[in-house]
Image (cartoon, rainbow over all chains, first blue to last red; front, side):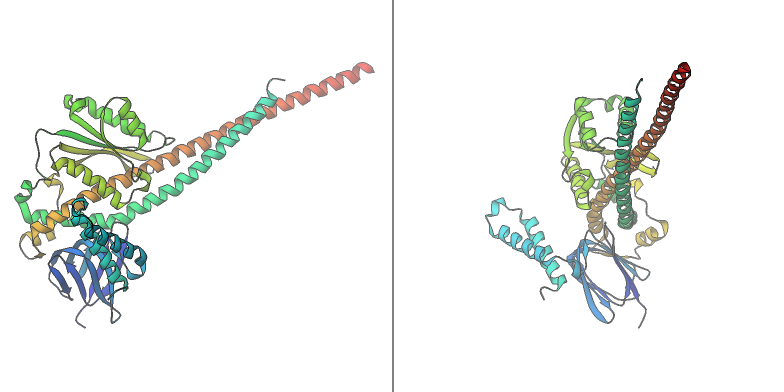
Length: 135
Length: 298
């Protein structure tokens, strides 16, 4: 294979991931973006979503809550407020959060911070996707 | 017999105090380690964010001077966030910090103008100090309390200050906290939080140059990334300051509890030797009485 990439996912609490891989797909603000080895130097803003990467020939994923990405010298650094591996995601909690956000969005408009509720809904939905609770 | 019973009582109570201070020392040691670990764990994130901000600032150049968070303002009040501890028994931790505050107040006429400065406070000690002196306290952060601070809590605090700055209430926001220099040195330190000093954002030469030269792909574009990045940058500064203040607090508390334990130990030894001497004197005197009595009977 033509080279490899190092993927590091960094959050304020810890380094979630630090490993080599051959391909990565990230939720950039303008849509999904793929990164392969020998990518040019790049900085991108990320959206809430699911990051997928190749691991031992299979596809693995994790949930990221916005943040940034920098590709430089074969290293992909993802700097995000939250990065959660599938096994760490509390699906019950995410489901409850999704339900709550839905209710708020369907409730009387005047009292709802629509932007916040929508963001909460998206976070919950992507968490569930990453956890594999939903395809 | 003057005090042999009292001496015994005192030895016991000093011993009890020693036990308590030793327990507190151990608790402080554990918490200190926890906050130190947290400070270490947050460093890579802070470094990445700070590095990115610096490099993008180099791309944008003079444009950033027009960003609201970078623009110096006229007219508004000053805001000062004072970070102290909730609890006492931590040596000179709080008094050092508050002394630095007084020193700052005596520096300049405008630093003393009570109506022109709003204080924000972390920690009960700082709150009672400032409110007793009649300062304006615009906000007390106690949810979550300082000891339970996490990144999101720090982010909310930063947001409160940013909002006050953006709506024009404050023309300047500063933070006063205790920087952790070593286990025995905690230095009261001022941070110029807002407006952000563009000169403080310096990226490393190489990559800043590459970025400014347009050799780097920026998605969607430099300005959009930068605008998203700056709030994160402020959050990490806030989080760092708070975690560092906590580390200083517990290092100071551990030190003062260790000193108290040592002092109690010394006192215990001293009292014990006085007690032994007194007891021996008593025995000698009793013996003399018996021997004298026996001698007289002969």
